[in-house]
Image (cartoon, rainbow, N blue to C red):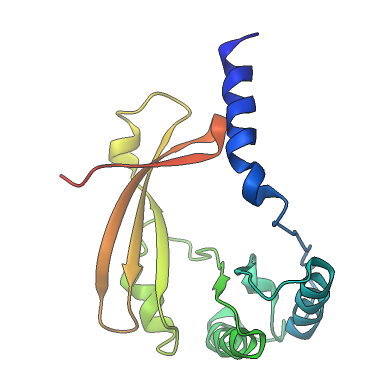
Length: 171
């Protein structure tokens, strides 16, 4: 067997303990937060567990679509915080950077919504990526707390063939 197949089998064996605990729920453009909460409750009932971490992707689809993103963003964040409280579970909201600029500073996100507990901003490190073998990518994860600025930064190499992030040692 080729070495890549062995690596795939090994990764599947490592993930076996938690892979059955992942439930994907599609969020269509017209999906509401109430529908998401109902789906999460149904999954909890089906899985017979309250222990979960919730990830909502494409949060820019939530809220009143007649409002601009800048107006909708703080409202959706508050609604997601309420949902996390209602569900008594940690909730990670994924909101892509929809700005036209490649130079958005991580702190800009924390200034958009003062009520968010913590904001994680994933940024491509283009200079470090140039030093990696394709298709690998250099990523920096910025941890920003409210309006108090950046609290930390972690560097990763993203390995697309394995969908794996490898954390770099601090320098």
